Image 1 (cartoon, rainbow, N blue to C red):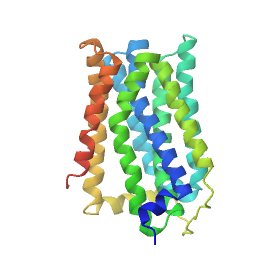
Image 2 (cartoon, rainbow, N blue to C red; image 1 turned 45 degrees about the vertical axis):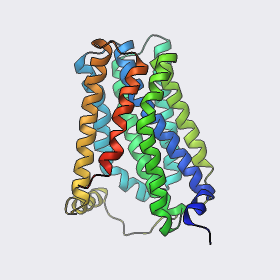
Image 3 (spheres, helix red, strand yellow; image 1 turned 180 degrees about the horizontal axis):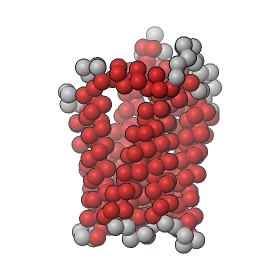
Image 4 (spheres, rainbow, N blue to C red; image 1 turned 135 degrees about the vertical axis):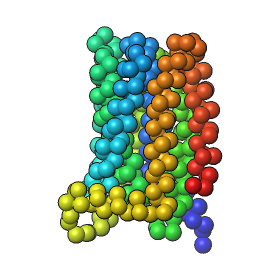
Length: 278
């Protein structure tokens, strides 16, 4: 019998999902540096405006995160993933277009950050929900491990790649690469052929399901501290992105490439933190 690892390596639909998720994650990491640099370099954003920009993405993740699981339970995940990817691509491409015509404003970046953050959460949840339809139950750990490894690599390599692209192309044009990554991701998702399995369950109101989910998480001895640690990580990551990026560009005069190297170094810490017991 072939090992489970070899089975997944030959599992075409899993490889398509893995490729799509990997490309999407790299696109998100590229955007995490390109958007703040667009605000700082092109729009001369203030400290307050940088804080609002980072808060917009975080707020959408918090708000939509409450509904993402419920939505993924009620609709087919493959169309949801495709719509999320194409939606993020469309949002991203508005930035370089507006910059080209000289009409880009910080309010547009706020709106794009909020909406793209919402679609990003939907994509992450839908991707996790689709995986059990593609692989056997005993392969779920390995499948999640492969996707998690890709995320760790993206945290390390993504900012560096983003810095190079911004250095060579300028920040708005680097965002075009981000948009293209989501289109490619949608293409891979569309190629998945295994039919989804939707579990029939008793219909409840959206708020009832959200309440049940919150109670389950916050009464669980492992999930609660895990959720709290993730929330704190993203809170302080947003603070670092808002303040340090501004400081690095205007006070230290770092070039985008060097700034990407700094954030890549920060990304190397994350896998270590994840392996630390709570």
